Length: 201
Ligand SMILES: [Cu+2]
Picture 1: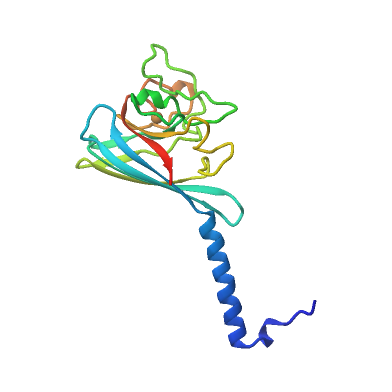
Picture 2: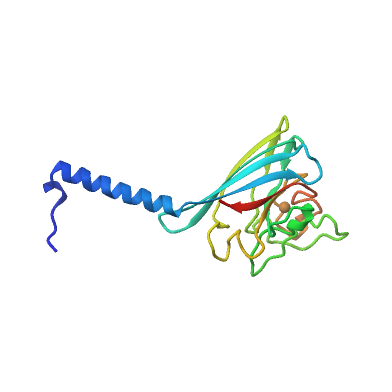
């Protein structure tokens, strides 16, 4: 193959090549983008509602990142824990089970609100589905977060495993408790206020 130095190519040739390369890149980027959504509903309070969008993109290094944008109305003002829980079920909200954490190490219930003795769970706040608090003011809250701990595409971290996944928004804030001495009841948000099953677009 004969190599042609770039500077000897005509300006039109260069711009055509550049346009072709950009078109090719954007098509590849577009094809790689997966999206999902979740409609958020109150567990018992019908005034709570919201919506989440999830977008997976692949970095130049091949790492999958999922950007999450969540908006909710009707929650009490203040911070509320948000996690992706391990099952696509919201009726009742407890059916979403523990935090999405495909393992092999996971205990998925750090605050064990219904138990007399808190569970031992030093994975928290590093379960694959652990996100950040949403802050609510005047009953409106919005949260953006990007995670490389979950994927929409198939694989070990996928939210679309055999039984799917759901968002849970809790009554209290997540204190990001991560030591056995920190794992007090409610440290990961306590009771469940809202839930939304994650559905692929
Ligand atoms: Cu949770």
